[in-house]
Length: 425
Image 1 (cartoon, rainbow, N blue to C red):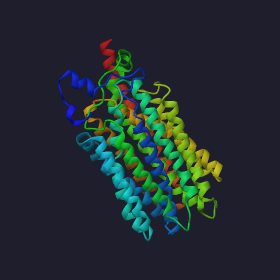
Image 2 (cartoon, helix red, strand yellow):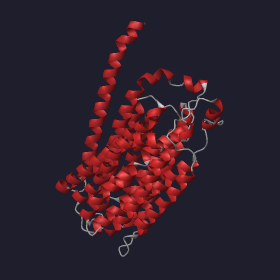
Image 3 (tube, one colour):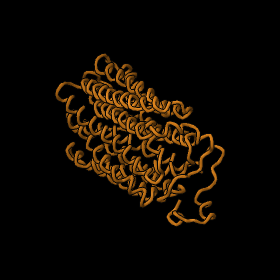
Image 4 (tube, rainbow, N blue to C red):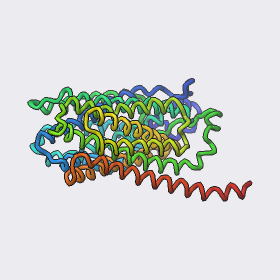
């Protein structure tokens, strides 16, 4: 929808702005958004691991490695808080295009850093640029999807599979193309990928400061209608779960390269990439499962069970894992759990008033960024003080605290609503 069609009262204009959804519930298959999501996170995942390789080659200690990931996440989270609302006003396409172009410029500048401390100064700007992208792209996806849980679940599933496929492949690419004698190579290739994304976004329909479609079928109206009163609670609990998942993800992404390349494990760059690949592969597998059913929506137990598995995976990584295979299994368990929390957080953020969709997806991404920020900072500090395995135990502690809060909040809400139902009976 473009700016000229907003608020028009004529039926002809409205019909042009809101085309009739197809049989699958989508207004128009947003293939451009799916392609952009894949390419962006392919570049980001490749770049994140390449940054760790670059910092390790510069002699960075674990604390600095964690700070590199944390500072980037801090810039991302701070921008997301504002960027969602900005995208609602200036248009999703414009916001996303500005963000990815700026990120590509910063990625090229990383190649000029003489030491890890220059990287620390630069990564917040790369994170801030990406903060302009994701809330806008997610709201853009909502704009191109007909209202109703079925259509939203299908398009969200394809979107999540797209970006997670990029994150899945990115570490492998970084491991295979990294060269000690040419460390700038992955950064140049990632910046070129960003240029391709700009072209894809410019060619993708929609993306104005519009509102997603309001049509939905009677079946979708009925589905979950009684649960919508609890939507804000589900959204906040999912946000909390997503925070813990991205804390775990940041711990794996920033801490395992140092351990894997150390004398203790002596893994190659390629094998380090494969182990991290296990985390993102399991996360994408969760997205495939989530898009095939709506049974997880407006239920608390899938969130709690997923986080319990993530807790188990981190405990095993910190206490028992001693090989690439063992770490790969632990990370896969945590990745599968992260897929559940992420898809829940994004689903509940997009569900609701379309006018403020960008603002809610901004908060969704900001909380995700804060999780990565905390994961990088805390894990780096813990690893420096107590060893390279202890960050996984710290991550397990964070998950436990989040689950405890979720259970307490949910049970207190259940007690509060029980007398009301009894009185009505």
